Length: 88
Image: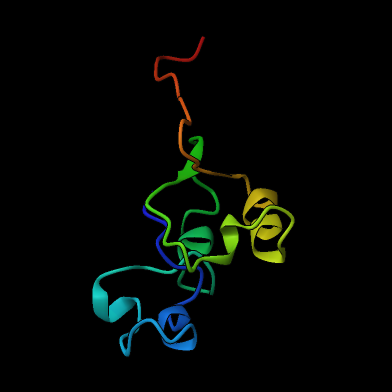
């Protein structure tokens, strides 16, 4: 799943862009309308990819990463390999 931003105004607060994530076409990971909440009951293995370097979920041990992992999400990293196939 696309996980560019943790929160919609992340790029503004980081001084990287005057635009919100939604205005750039990105849905935030967090918040009541974010991906984590929206796909809370999805039965599939959930992986965030395409993560912006401003996103605090990339920091091991951060509250944001802990929240995502406790919700059942994997944070994609360079070299991550996934095996797709039917479950038995």
